[in-house]
Image 1: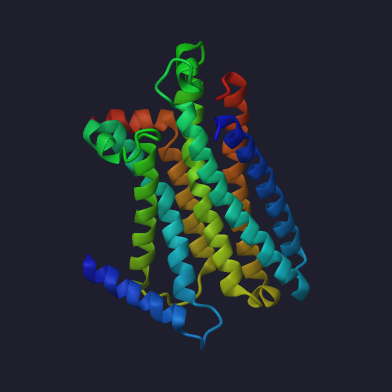
Image 2 (image 1 turned 135 degrees about the vertical axis):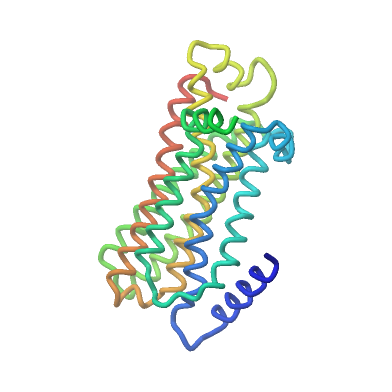
Length: 127
Length: 154
């Protein structure tokens, strides 16, 4: 895992520093993937907290905000991790519509994973 | 600072976000070289307000969920419509947290694609759809917030 992050981050930095291309394609793609991962990760953390009181307690980083604090923070950190790892697979072309599709898919999936009737159904399945 | 201030500030930022979206989207529809600079300013404002909205909303959320009988959450849960918290508020707090990430993407896209946006229609369309996604995932917590405030204000 460490190697994937290191390789991805190194390629990301090379791409960002490369001024021979107008578009740092890897950075843009990494961000599409990272942003798509944020809602999905938040949703997964939300369901995990509903299933396990231990996870809920772990995610409560701030007493006033409650477990929401950990769900959002770790959700964003997961997005960052996905963005750092994604350049390991070099894009063959600038497939912006595919990247947009992944982003929209992530947003809808993340929204579904925090919609209470779906959360209850998934928690019931897991338990 | 009183929670009423944060609630007002949160609403004000929401209005600013709507204005930044409208200006950026209109600029993007008929983009010119001069308009590109305005587009960058508009999306930067959208990005800053998205994060400020999230931060101020979190401040209001602390008062909303305070473990006292007078807090909005306690009153909603004790009232005839507890689903307003368990379904609507849950959806609002999480979908609102998605928006700063989408706004960051929009900002990086406009800075990275820059003048290519003038030449390539597909990049303009992708950026427009990213802005629309930011807008839709802002409107959802907006509408839910208005409904929740009608049920019990902070």
